[in-house]
Length: 612
Image (tube, rainbow, N blue to C red; front, side, top):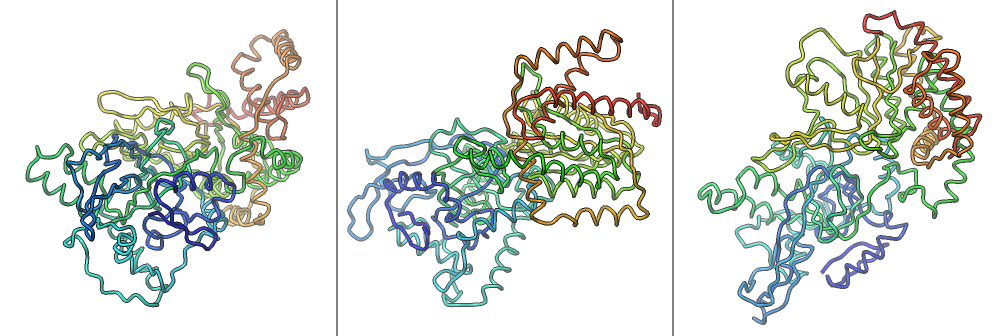
């Protein structure tokens, strides 16, 4: 039996009828309001075998596994054989008749999923408050400390007996009311202690949150590595999983030929369910974005009212954001203009190996104050849904694993800091560079960053070969001089103000905007990234004529690369204004800002030793 809380009611249904029922209900717009989320609710508050959701990132894909799709079991009370379904569960009932002709083996795929890497705190906060109706509150009928007992009671309700007596832990906690706050603190701390001994393989250092093994029963070919998805499924946290894994691991040590998996592979693929729960998928949908302020389905036809109202306000919001960024960048309006263009950029297609739409920005001339770039990143972080700050210190370059690597012993993909979701903002702080020698790892990491910027791809290390994985990551490089990494555009910062205390100045800017103002900026940037764009034939002809005219007077003044950059700037400028096609005015404005930028770069090209 399956159960879930649906608007205050408890619904019981059989496996066969539940799948269609839940899939239909989960496709409704309000599904996120009544299904508890693994992202927001502590695992020890969630009922085993209940319906939950998880906003996650597919970090690894394990080999297919086989399970008993249908089987016959002996009813302990009547001694009669009963046909059972093995779908959406990890452990079968006792008394299975393995010789029955009704036994059928089926296939399912397992994906290792983690929270979206670098997800901003404001995204988690808004997502959590938006699903407040689905929050789970301890009660007299279900307290977190009763977790082990709840598993057994659920099994009794389901007429199952998944755990032998020796695998059951004695239960001494009372069933009545208690200090819920104390229990809430104790359970996560014990889990955190256990998690310290288990590598959860998060791509970014310091990340926290739940991870899970996602069991997919159909259409698994539609899932991709590094894809962000929202999954609805049946939560499985049976202690029997850990006990069985321990038994298998010990038996494989005694008899290595007795099992197909090594002990290390067993440890990785069968972690304790209390730390890495299993989620049996009923329904999943890819996430075009993870901004909770926007419709989850993206900017489709059914959201035309939302889109039209947003487009009308985009020019005004852009002006406010431009003023805000100008203040952040010490009064430099031109640098603020290019920062907006960078933040709305997006790889919209690929032509052969060339990613179109990317706009890596190198902001040079940053003040030689360590707190400037860090504060600058914090300001960016509170505007974009996902981001990561990478200080390019010699130690980081020589010691960090940026590129994911295949571990053949454990049969898993070791994550790297460049294993990121689409539209993540990667902030490279080159002002942290120092004198020293890059070792082999450092050279490999710098090369990986260069390939990411130039080709929007990361070459994963499979020891015997490398495999290309395309990505769509916005890279912003903050540096004092010109960056040693490639970029699509460089703008030199020219401060118009000189605050006596830069730290206090930036700190005041960061806390200045109201929450409503920040939400407008967040919606604006996400919407601009998703807009479609086109160029009419007459505008294309006008651009070609302009290019010919510019080269008539001085053929060396503009190259094909310059034209390409101007077209990218014109596209991003149009989208930032809420325009889905290039107009003559936008083209002229793009030419003007590019002329100002190039003029500034000419003035500053000899200031630093690494300038051209």
